Length: 116
Length: 152
Image 1 (cartoon, one colour):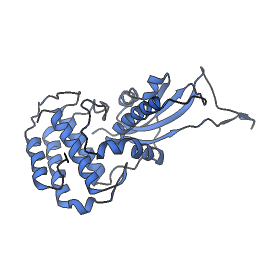
Image 2 (cartoon, rainbow over the protein chains, first blue to last red; image 1 turned 30 degrees about the vertical axis):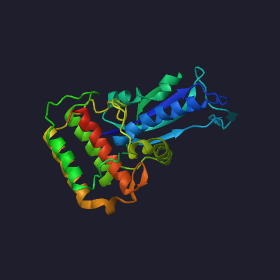
Image 3 (cartoon, chains in turn cyan, yellow; image 1 turned 90 degrees about the horizontal axis):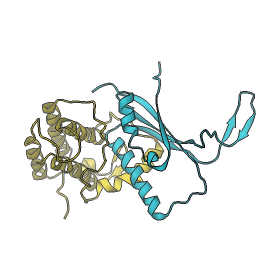
Image 4 (cartoon, rainbow over the protein chains, first blue to last red; image 1 turned 45 degrees about the vertical axis):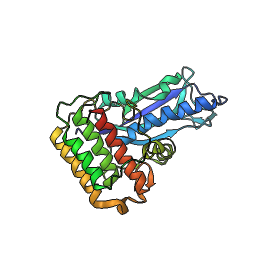
């Protein structure tokens, strides 16, 4: 097998702290995320994932601190997931199954640099 | 109906006979995997269960997997056919059929040699501790699912 490298999938979506899913929506979301993450894990390709909350502060180089998280095009980072993949194409193929894409969100796939 | 136990020699022999009935050009009934990729995928399951070569995912992932994924993998209910348990992520990888088949059979033999007591309460890297029944279901159901996929 080819050497595998770590790729970070960065999730962005419109954050809505007031959204409370119906029980049916919640169950669909659990199944979608569980199926996707479970498939990656069963192939021993899942390294880590974090889901972000709604609290945030943003610091600038002059040490000033602004309340809130960074928004761009109405979207903000909502989480990430690190996978092991042979190359960028394979990491992108894995990312295509991400349920956030069915929720209006986006996924950015980035390579990570190895320790040297 | 209870699934056969992976710790039962006859049940294991049944799986081995079916694995030996696979041919290098066996085509899947559903999904896109090739037969050698399917066997390599099963071998990853054995690596996760028997060897310590894969790191544990972080705590958040383990929590998600224990809550959402483990119950479906260790119960007796068959998987849905064509379910995306494994996204088609083996696309670029063409392992050797004979080698992967031998590995699968060897892992089954090793599972029998270790025996039920070895597995009881043994920790899985993603799912934490499993009972021997859960280990058996995890292995048997997954193997049976993919052998059905290739018509044996």
